[in-house]
Image (cartoon, rainbow, N blue to C red; front, side):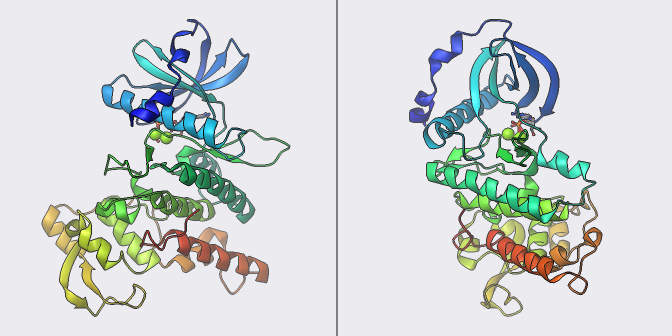
Length: 353
Ligand code: ATP
Ligand code: MG
Ligand code: MG
């Protein structure tokens, strides 16, 4: 990816005065480092500074974050219209690479928590979804896979004319389509079936995560909060129905971690587009026998059930088809239909942004 790295303007690196950024408070911590709210004494404004851990692997990935985000900002979204965080600058400090961003508000997980994990009103789900999709269209156009879409990586924007808005942040795991390096990517709850199974991936994996996020915004809890990868996959199968297509299972590297080959036809499994499959998912006992440790119980109590039931009859929405007003019913049906296009096992059939 040397062409990308050249895109970074290295002249910026050495012109920083020593006391430009004054740390006011810590905003968040992640895998890659810490993020601080700082006063920028040169521009007299607040900025968010991400201080990357000083280990070579993190440094390399941070250079990727700087490269891809500067490309997205400058080349694909010069007028800041597409809900992608603006990177302002980057510089080394005491052996740490630091990246400065525009200061944004709370992340969507924090917002859900403030709401006691009871989900947002459909109007906000709709607005936020549309804006995230806008960002995803730009990313797909640039050939960039985010690889870590989740509520923590979507931030509320400060209110402009009191309209609610969000921006996508954290390109620290992002990569170029066709130049994928890592196979262990995406946060577990938002991990797509093809990544779980070890199959070559595309920008379609972000659409899977996006579907998980949309559902979570509405119901307030993660859609597939599995305590292990097997747990995540069995929740997918139970909630969405069906399973990944046979040609994907045949070629994926990790299929045998989750599935058993049962011959050319497995008549019990006709959920996938009415077709029979030659694979069936392992039972919990088989997984236990293999791992000799049981999948742990998920962190949250989560009623299992089909996708439509989850959307329609979520307990604290106090909704069910019987007492739903007609318009709300139509909205819920539309939401289920929308989600079905996103949490689609087959990456080729999954909706693009
Ligand atoms: P991850 O573990 O998801 O890879 P990370 O180490 O790459 O995280 P970020 O996701 O970039 O770090 O930032 C961590 C947290 O800091 C975010 O979830 C968010 O709450 C906060 N944060 C990051 N950037 C900003 C910003 N521009 N404005 C306000 N808060 C921010
Ligand atoms: Mg993050
Ligand atoms: Mg990250």
